[in-house]
Length: 245
Image: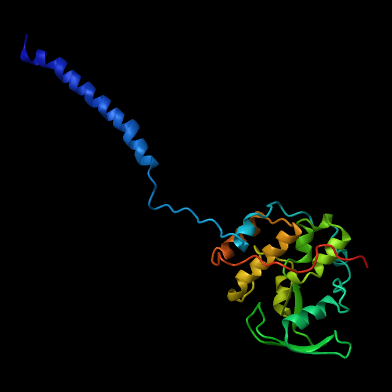
């Protein structure tokens, strides 16, 4: 027998052992490597408890319903006295959010004051009744609410929503009118320093009244609130059902 013929079984054994070892490494070593954490990948930290970001993540996500049937009157007459303090809601909000307020002899009607700063623009705006540059804005617009659940509410709940201080902010009139009925996905205040508080306010209102959000709206909310994860959910305001007129 030739020496080369004698070596073949041993060489064949070594070759098979090498293949087996390589296969074992492929099944174990690579699987183990796959299980190791990727140092370049970071998981998003959970939103802090009680934060607006956490509340936003809990909102129901659905498509926008048709605006069919929406009328301002569906939310009751404008600025009614839902808290029964003898003053209309608009004057209540002006008195609360303006400085240097002067009132009429009736004790309700706000005649003048100063909005400093205006939350939407960051500027100082003088208020004078009859020549006002200040609007009372619904953080969550009434028509937006209508398309995201409010059309199925009772009349009392819609009146409460339209007059709830939690949903109302004194703001520059021209900026407010540019907002229209936009949600977070389509409009944010030009004053970037106010955006966290603005979005937190919208989340608070939607959470309180059980309104849903669209996916684009939720994404926009989370994008803003990710920059201020400690921003708290806002509480308070009026009951969610207004007293019978």
